[in-house]
Length: 184
Image (cartoon, rainbow, N blue to C red; front, side, top):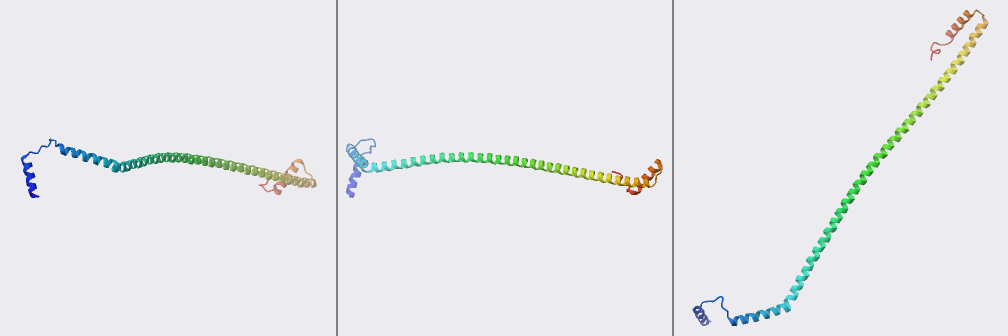
């Protein structure tokens, strides 16, 4: 083998390598090998590779579509949550307003009831005072009649002049009635 090497080295050493030169034999065989390799790849390698690439592309597209649907669903749910939160706030404010109105109505009703009871108590007290006054006046009248009758009885026992009758009645009345009973 070393001899062969020497021969090849001598042949190559004499010739300068030409990069742009065409060797027809080598080009023919390169083309044949390329076409055979292309046929083999196209027949047995490309279909599985292209099928795998298509399946992968479909999975990626399905994942993108699913992500888009989920994003749209999340946005819809978020908007629905916001709307429900706003409705809940409005309902809470409405309930608070209703509670305030109910409290105001209850307070007003209690005030009105208290005023009515107060007026009723005052009216009852006035009526009791009137009854007591009427009873006191009636009692005073009865006492006055009794006193007048007693004084008249005394006068009949002793008959004096008009002036002396008057003095006798006043004297009897002053002794018979206490000083506070004669005043209102």
